[in-house]
Length: 563
Image 1 (cartoon, rainbow, N blue to C red):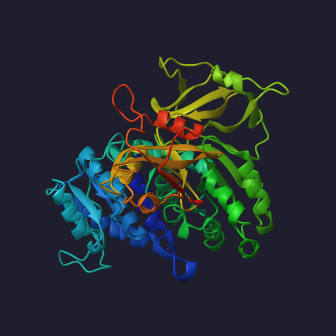
Image 2: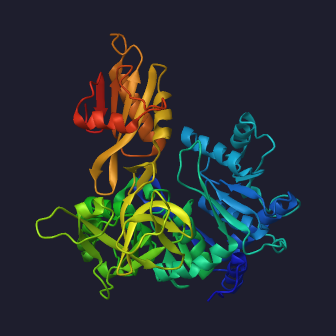
């Protein structure tokens, strides 16, 4: 088992590769023809070899200690590029592959500006377009290298032994990863993870996942970002286990397919959103259920805030026939500011205080947690458990002063504000709300995506030159997720030659395709309808109030359920 004193994460991974070179390190699942699942595997020896070639490239460019963007399309090349950065002592900055989507292109360029990356690792097929994109944006000095060509230059043949990784003077508090998560595409926010954090977090991950070297780790959290990357890709490599990596949002966009992947590829532990469990329970057919075998699924982590006990119960009942045990459930909290879970609790743990409390609504309005009296309006809050490693604290949102047990405060992880409102009671942590800006929208697959209104508004306005001011917001749709609504002012909207229906359809399709979310509602309105605040900025809350109260006077309205 890896030593606790080692801050060189890569030393542990290389030791695992030397001990079990033929063992499968990663299984990358994808959808083949007619919706069937297929997979590409890479062994520890293959991954280690390719990572060493990549590390040599980075060393040749003198970029040890500098940020390097990791953008390959295929999973095996992404994993090798990421590990190669760590081998070379560079700071790995994972980003989406270039796919032509405007908000992803904008985000990639914003990340380059923010971190100052001088090297981007991509693939042969993407490198030319990416080089041109960077040059047009004024980053002509940023070099783009094709990872799948590593080992085929400088007289090396593919499969030929590479030199050991370059010797670096990496210190525990040097940056290993720079993870960009929350924030609009034009201003993404990066979370730094040092080598010390990467190493110290592994025992926390093992505690939550209940993982061993024999585990097969995977779930619906995308492996290119934050918690999914650290828990589903890097943690198995540290253990010497196998990571089973699913595409962003799950294979093929079918809610039942990720459960099929658990069955077919032997996943024993991993993290998935509440929404993923809920959709799988609702949409898996009896015929699909009959083909599943889930008895080996030891730990099913519910990564969500707040928790939804009804979705958990429905999943357990639906998949019991396939051998799934509700005792596998573990509740956890993994905010973007900490890619490792910060709190967790096995659902089957009956010791201590109750996992769910009926809390009086009025008490939460006062910033307190008090049990509801009979007949009193209440909310059910489910514990996400106790701290599993990092320092957790609650602070008053206005002053930042610590709040006592039983009082609602803003959750901080190692001093960083997570944007979650939470309360501690009897040592348990309950998440009561979220202060992050963003709209929790159902994705095309079994996950909830946090989309930012600025990105949606920019996309809507680019649909036509007729588009003026825009307001994007969410309205309640179901527990833990919203329905996306876009209110769009249309220039000359009263003219008879304007095809309002065609414009609405194009806008709805554009937003659906670009952000990979379930269709919402587009409302086309006259100029002057979208309100501004005293600073002259769009007031989304005011427009949302008009929409919910029925006071908007639409020229045309279209949604996923028709007009």
